[in-house]
Image (cartoon, rainbow, N blue to C red; front, side):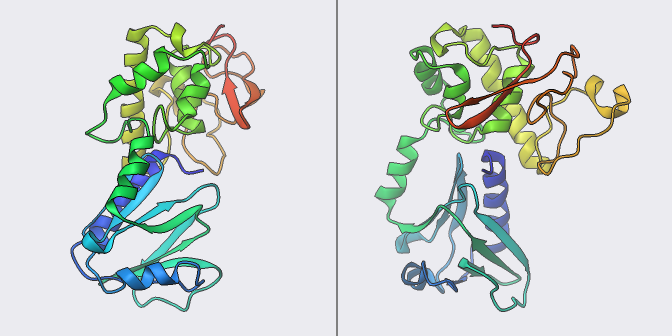
Length: 269
């Protein structure tokens, strides 16, 4: 599932290419046809992301809410747009570009109250300037759940996914099963600040890089990481591989239906 930096990159891209002018909106697949007809030809006011949610604001006509889920993708190019291929839930066409949305978990037209209801259910997003990290701390510090589970709970923290979860805990030597209420406040502040730093870098470069310069391939002589997610990471999807810091094997377990990665030596219980 795309993590928060991907949705913020998409929001910036869509705002730059489509906002401020009328756009053509259609649903070649048909599942979004009625809603698409209501915003077709309207001005896209802005696009914004909150956690893993993307919002296209059409002013009084409503807001298109998109959640990509596990399988949703956007594809786009310069005009003219070709005939749709496959199950295109929504096609957006502007002055210079077109964009196709396929396979999202959510693609729906909402009124302002419904949009605010979604945002109200989410925890603070480290990539938003209006984020209130104190709200996340209050939820973390009062919970018996593990910090690994809490970081993935979108009602606690919005936008953090499996990669950022694993990597930020490693970077600060935090055992993933540590209960939230056992976490030191100063350490939480460091985790939050690092998430802001890492996720902003993810928005900038379009991939997740978490490895310090002294542990990069060019510094250590190791082979670069080969993975469809791209980027250099310490523990994510490196089960059994030697830790880049201590050399011990990276561990793995299932936690709440998601893969958890950590170094038992660098992140002692």
